[in-house]
Amino acid sequence: MINFPDIPDEAPDALVSFHFEDVQFELPDEQQLSDWLQDVVKNEGKAFIEVNYIFCSDEKLRDMNEEYLDHDYYTDVITFPYSDDAVHGDVFISYDRVADNARQLNVAFEQELCRVLVHGVLHLSGYLDKTDAEEKVMREKEDFYLKRMFG
Image (tube, rainbow, N blue to C red; front, side, top):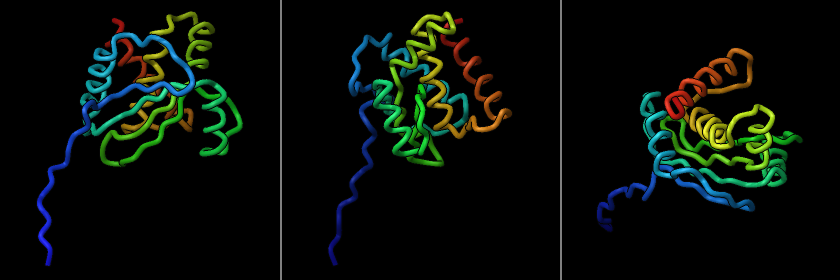
């Protein structure tokens, strides 16, 4: 019988990380965003493992939407959860949709970006938005956390 040594589980270097696929732009203060998103998860009473935010173009996200979700349309965010018990997953965000939404809603890009960031982490926290009732709760949560970020 072989005795294997106990190897401790290593925590990721950062609980929240930001990556760029086929777009590039300056993120506001990454540490502040990370702290804010971790605070959202804590406030929701969830365990936090890791979230990777991946920024990409409209076309890249539309292709993913079609391939993985069978949806043939543009979207601003797609979330891939890896755990039901904790916040752990990848959140793909279309830079193009965020910029366009910000223009249409007449809000700052950073505010719309934060709405989409928190939307993704709320999905990973167990919130859905398929029905009108679910969408209403999601919007209320987004607004609540945006006020905490922007006052």
